[in-house]
Image (cartoon, rainbow, N blue to C red):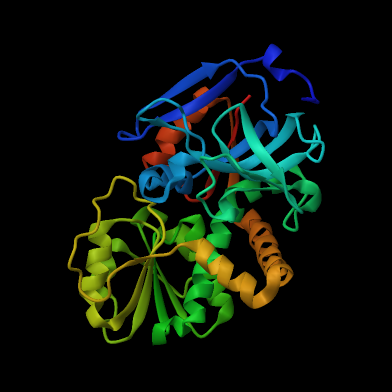
Length: 371
C-alpha cells in the first residue's frame, strides 16, 4: 500500500466530541491515536464545521433517520453527530484524491476522519459499510475545484457551511409545494420562522409569487423575522388562534413543537390542506399528539425531491438552478447573519449546549474549528 501525506498521527491524536444518544445534553471528549490507513482510505483534517439547530436535529432524529450511522463511535450509547463543513486531505491511499485537496461535506465533530473513499466526478463518496444504506447525497464530498456552489474566501466558506444545506432543504420543500400547486392553497404558515431553513423557504416562496407567506415565531424573534422582508405577515405563537380560519392553507413546521402544531391544526381543521414536518428547532418541546384535526403531518425527505428534480431538469440543470439560488441566499445573508468563530472541541461542547438549549439569537451562526 502506498500512502502519501504527512503522518499527522505522530504529531497529534484524534479527538472527538461525542453525544449521549439518550440524554443529548450530555457530551464527552474522546481522544485516541490515529491508526494506519487501510487500502482505499483517505484521512481528512476537519478544518471547520457549522453547529446549528439543524445539527442538533441530526441527533434528535438520529435513530429514526440513521444519522448515528454516519460516524459510529464504537461505544454503545454514544454517537458522533454529523455537521456540514470543510476538510482537507492529509493522507491518502487514493492517487485520485491527493493530499492537500479540500472538500465540502458532512463530517464528524472531530479533528480527523478516515473515509473509505471512492472517487466521483466532483469529489468522492463514502463507501464504508455504515453509510452504504444512505442516499447518495448524504455520502458525497465535493472538491472545491469541482464545486458548482463554491465561493472563495473564509467568510463565504463559513456561510456555506452554515447555510448551504439548510437553504437547499428549504428550496426543495418550497419546490415540493409548488410542484403540487400548494395543494390548492394560497397561504403557507411557516413555524419557527427565524430558523435558517425557514428563511430560505420563505425567500423562495415569496420570490415565486402568488402565495401569502406567514411567519410564526417567538416574541423574542418577532422583530428579527419582520425585518427579513420575506414574510408577508409575522405573528407570534400566542397569536395562532387569531389567524384567519376561512382560507385554505398549508403548513411547514421547522419547530417540532407538538403543542404548537396541534394548535395550528385545531385552528384550521380541514382548511389545512397539507402539513409538512421538516425539522425540530424546539428540541425540548413535547412531540405532537395523535389524532390532530386536518391532515396527518407528513415528514419531508429532501433526497426524494432531489431525485425527482434531477430526473426532470437533468443533473446539470439541477445543479445550475440550485447553485444560482444558493449564491443569492448566501450573499443576502450578509445583511442578517453574523458568523461567530469557536476554537477547539472543548468550546464546541459548550456551544452544543447553547444551541441545543435554544439560546442562540437567530442572527448568529457558529463555526467550530476543531484544532
